[in-house]
Length: 301
Image (cartoon, rainbow, N blue to C red):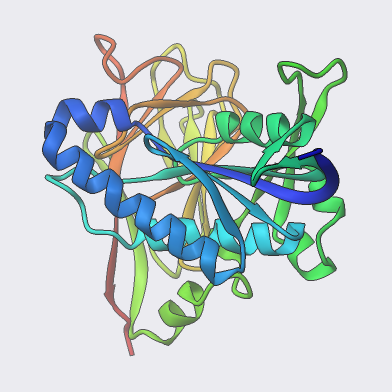
């Protein structure tokens, strides 16, 4: 059968840190956890009328008729996985990347530059992130386009020119999932508790931003010489908390159950509990750590 080219959205999603998961849980438990995630991804694909092309280990490749349904499915995937309970104290997360463009279809499989680009976007994503291209964002409806942000123009393997990379802010898109609406109706409020040495800061409804760095006037001052004067800040956005790196040497983020990741002029949502280290790994001797715990408490009044 001759391959035919047509524009579609190709999406890749895989379990973040699955190798560590197998080491931590053992083959049987880890496989059970991964299979549960794969099942949730399949359901999200079906909900938005996509088709799973194939699964390879802990990765799913799916196709959608347009960029909108791919973005909605990607957001639904993240929401479903974020709601999963921990497995032996290990928090599961997925990385998602997608791209809309002309693709060759042959015998139910897809080939070509659009497929390669989508795979590269998934490779750039961190756990809990959705990454796409500016070309895909341009193909979105205006409402969904507002739920994306440009990240950077990056060199992507196999591409001569740099690719403008964008992130889907799925946690704040009330039109993408029901999660935000459900939380808004709940009688609880999100609170982030931060601790560094003897200093404790609580981010509740009265504190929207916390600055961290070597300036002693910040809410959380850091003495580590690897830290920048304004190393980063934590922002409250609705019921979510985001760490934004503003530093020279980067911020090392560890969320309980995940491997340590490095943020350089980037941002990530803080969930559960974990640590932030400034300019070098939290495992380095003498590293100055900020620990965080995200929790919910009854609303006052």
